Length: 205
Image (cartoon, rainbow, N blue to C red; front, side, top):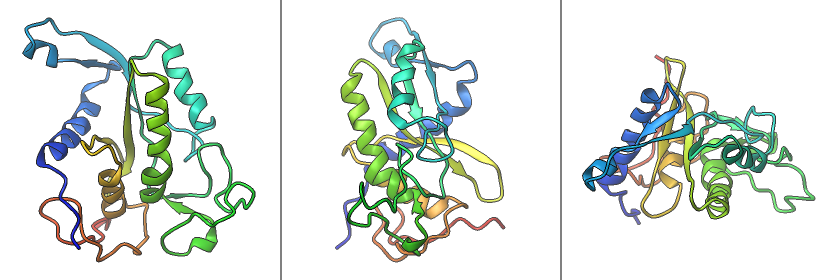
């Protein structure tokens, strides 16, 4: 059965978030929404590019999250590399049977110990982001990805879904990240309007 399509406004916000990445060279986000309410705008200090032990960062996920308000940030994005990694946000191997008695890795070649980022973004990072939002209800915490762009370098992107899941960014990473060779989801029904089924669109040429 085909899953419901993500509303067009969700994709618009996702695209807008990607555009924001290019616009915040001063690490500040202009809040134009205030103008629509008849109020003056404001600048909110933030950070659109953060890595943790989920990928190639040096600190655990929640330590990085806690450092943001300590530095006076009003918003931040967990935007780590796409592709695949061998550890969770605490630096624990996905193959550690004490923490993961049931093997958690989906996708091609799970015995290698690398979880594809489409899965960790959806099943592990996003629940951590939800927990972070609950810890800091006056802050904006965004689900993001440092996209390995086919034929190019990197691009910070972000998705916001109205259904409070990370299935959109998960599909985006699977389909478009050049660092992700996994083919296990090819043929699945797509969540995105205009696409019937998942396929790989991450060739570098």
